[in-house]
Image (tube, rainbow, N blue to C red; front, side):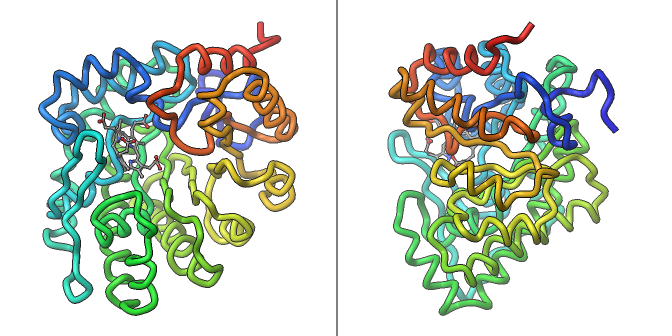
Length: 347
Ligand code: CP3
């Protein structure tokens, strides 16, 4: 049950339509904001930034304060889980993350689940600091990477690859991959449960690299691991709403929403609103899906698409967002223009 004090974003996740629609943007805390770059310059490195609760809380709040977003996304990274599990993770400026790779004959879990979950304690501290400072009308979204997307970094060692090494593993080393996914599900479940305990109002699972998989493999690597991770957090007593983001699901989306019990579904840039309305039951909130490149281009192309998305979902619970993360080169004025359109006609 929601009350009049419940943040709009949570009401939508509970299945209620809200107008104007609540909004937040993936990767909203980051390099397109000058205040973020100032903060970033004071951190030793990106991991240290993520593990410094005072700074991470500040970065989480910056976009909410600047734009009056309805949701705050926890400032952390999906790769912290691998760091906590004992793999060497570094973020190189201008390159991105570099991860120590695992081999097929080695189990990933190098430390007990409890130890890994405890190593992430600074993140729970960030969550409680943000929740203390955030207005009651705003929702704090905790998150983790979904199992396949995180496993992919442990196999490939970096992002931006064609993912063929990990996809060949799925066929050639099926058992090793299943073990890797199992380990990630267990550690991620404890990580999310601790975020919820610390005050996260909703949780999101980022499956950023779900694209391009054959349907049968999609079921094994995306649908089932997401379903199992959510079932596991429920077993651990987590009651907050969950948003899944199987990016690039395409025609596997109907099977995904049938099998994975979610309150919200994150949509990518490629999927069409008409298809979404056909295959996603209206009891599930849709979250999406403006192309982040339109947010760079701006102008009428951007404005028309914002209005199209709003119109397409006008009669169902909708959270406005991007189809993927905001880019560093995004002009602040374009973000502001989108927010203005979303709030047009509001009292
Ligand atoms: O606003 C927010 O969403 C902040 C919290 C956040 C970050 N990463 C901070 C970050 C979140 C939710 C993520 C998720 C994440 N991280 C994903 C899933 C979402 C997506 O974009 O697909 C993935 C795949 C990663 C892995 C990752 N982290 C990559 C590939 C990179 C390098 C590319 C890039 O965007 O810089 C990162 C680094 C990273 N994570 C930065 C930030 C703010 C940039 C680091 C810096 O300031 O130098």
